[in-house]
Length: 424
Image (cartoon, rainbow, N blue to C red; front, top):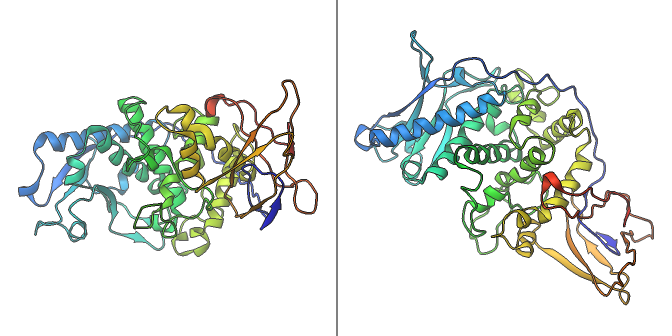
């Protein structure tokens, strides 16, 4: 516990080691033909009608083409497919009815309300993902979902294939080997990006209490470490714990919108390099499955990114500061105070004035996390220059980065942030 006289959101953690690795060249746009897609049903009696199957096939094909156009390697060789000498291969999409006797063993393990997932029947301990073993599996709940929701769910799964199956970074690792704050966070971002491209950017702007809102906005309690993925957090009024990994989509979206073109194209470049020492045969290496390895990977990618060129310890507090106000400024249906409360698992409010010049606070400091403190200045005469300073308990200025919110309306246009120990 550190004693503070005044605080704002900050990068909490010391001993961070930045290791820069060479970033591979930007992947060239895909030149191999896009496969066709076909929904296959092992239980014909429960198979959706032709129009419903064609809708699913068309959505998968659309998302597939969008990600391929961003420079990702197509994962076609990994998929269960039918190869026709007269044209491109046909990739199978399995429709799953868990109650049907003819369904696959993998399908029978699902509940009747499941939506979609990527199933891989075999992952070699030596060479990673094996060819012709991967399938997108969909259920009746997805077939019945509205267009934009069904498309997002399918695009999410397709992005898993492009990002962590076919890329250099994920090619030799089983999906369960890579921390979910990477794998699920980028898939949520990629899925919603593709949905906005297909249906328009305003097609999904859910209300705060809708189930999909936490994924869409990336509402995550960043008071808890970035690397905390699942099993240890329960939202208020919920009876079950929540996987926080999906909601790190806000970080990946920030990097896309603040420094790039808003798309997941930059991730194709990031994923062109694996964590150090995690090439062929690394499935069994515990170090390649660790949060530490993937934090170093992200730090190296950020430093090698020509548009950023800075380490994670600088980028994370900048992101967290803008995250505190980004969504309410961008979406009129979100209240700023409620956003901060949810986004940081509570926000502390203090007021300073000529009569109250300092406030003493105890802050629970954690690595890769932030504390939200909203400071209101009251009764300040017009024209006066006001300073906000953070002092540790021994009277010295805080050595960690302190970030004060800018005045812009969104990530691409936010005014330069103050990055000094005493921000004025």
